[in-house]
Amino acid sequence: MIKIQKTENQKYIYFTKSILDAAEINVGDEVEVTIQNGRIIVEAAAQARRRSDLQTLLAMMPDDYEPEEINWGKPSGKEVW
Image (cartoon, rainbow, N blue to C red; front, side, top):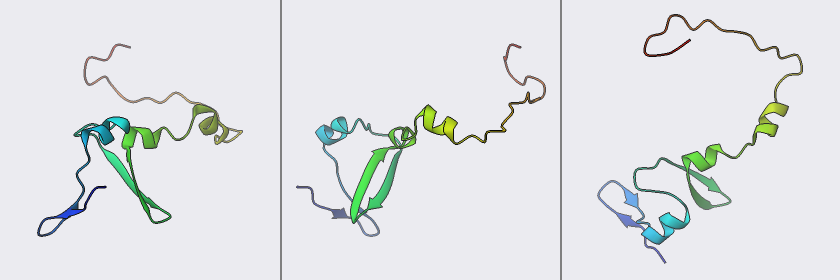
């Protein structure tokens, strides 16, 4: 069991190394925090973004979509064209 701690203006939870390892979250990683059915869900932002697979994303494209070439201007770094 983990106890919620507090400072003057904030409340926080310390996660053990084993919990972070199991969740594949490292110190410094960005996380997304959501509330679902009264539960606090903490997940690595990269994991949260992987919820959709390519087939699902492609199915959302309009049938009349036509790719086009876009001129992004002159190279500004070491791009090779």
